[in-house]
Image 1 (spheres, rainbow, N blue to C red):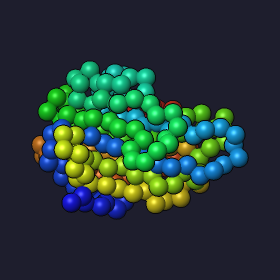
Image 2: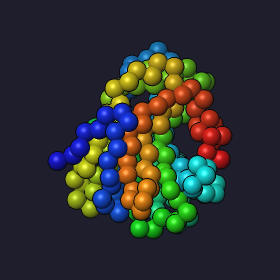
Image 3: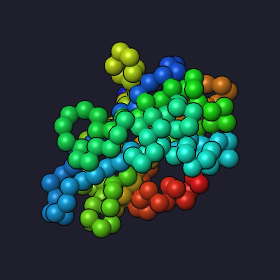
Image 4: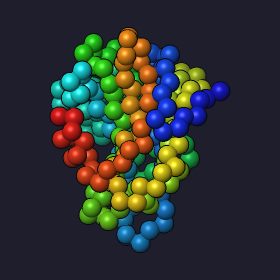
Length: 184
């Protein structure tokens, strides 16, 4: 049975290999454009910065150099049930310098399309066993991000040799560029 997390809650991740599924639905809007939300992973070292540019995994860099984090591809519409984008993680392969993986979702061309997370609902992040499909934990974002164009859904972090997941749910309006500035 999956653990349902609340914002700020933390739980140990026991599996070395799992999938992070991210999902959302969009409201009907009059912006005239489809919504294109993108999941990204930032693999950080102890200094809170990306190990190297190749450790920023997103739709244009689908795999980290150590093959520990693999994005399954860009979903341009978010239509359908279940996960809209997924990231496979194998902690047994992760670079030993890595201490944190930040998981964010951003709205592609949000300013140009006049879109924000206030127009998104049913957003969630979940971790499940890649092999069995069994859901281990889930965090449903029930916040109203009326002006934000990017949300840090959660983070995996290593403390005392143990990997844990923390439900974050923090939004900002600078988009992907703000996260790149923060973690680069």
